[in-house]
Image (cartoon, rainbow, N blue to C red):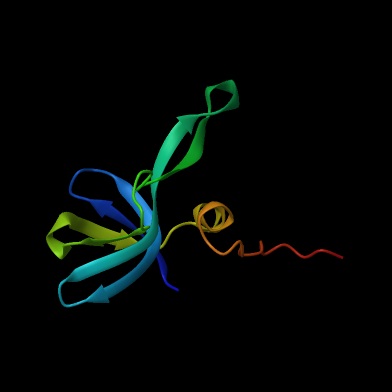
Length: 97
């Protein structure tokens, strides 16, 4: 499982389990990353199903449609895994005694 985020030529950011082959990238359980207005008007992370009406949750995207890949921040990774992934989260660096 390789969770990556990417920017598409359309300007959308998506996150999902990415596998690469010669024809492009396959993304399982893709989610669109967005910013919503949160409490007090502050920006807040929003994730939505990229394929809400699809029977299968796996797509192939051509390499020419991807501007770049990036490693998502732990907060984005954790939010994705809680909602769309396996439920595992990256613990914070703080110590609990």
